[in-house]
Image 1 (cartoon, rainbow, N blue to C red):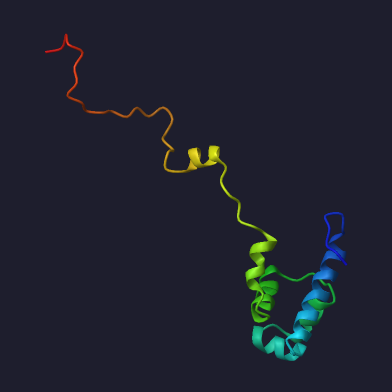
Image 2 (cartoon, rainbow, N blue to C red):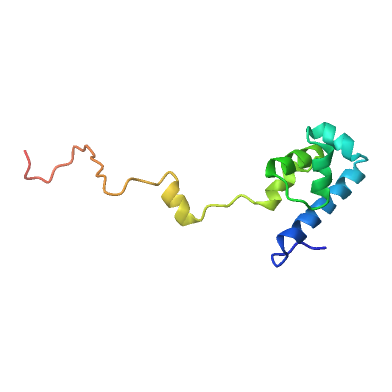
Length: 112
């Protein structure tokens, strides 16, 4: 099954659970062994694999134990700043309305 934006939350949870179960089996781990590695109960591992709602920190621990935590970067990619954002939030940002006083030896000519 493919996870699509039109899928329901329940369908997505079920698919994630079955994918994690397949990864656990490919790693030759039982639910008990995965529970020992993560410090999460065997029951919670079963709930995850059966598509039950679990906490995000539990998901991260399971992904870490299965060696796939780096895939979180694909799940929620880091946003790149647009040029306008770089200007606003980058080094070029200055406070609006704050006058910067510059000292200079230059004079208009009529100043003494």
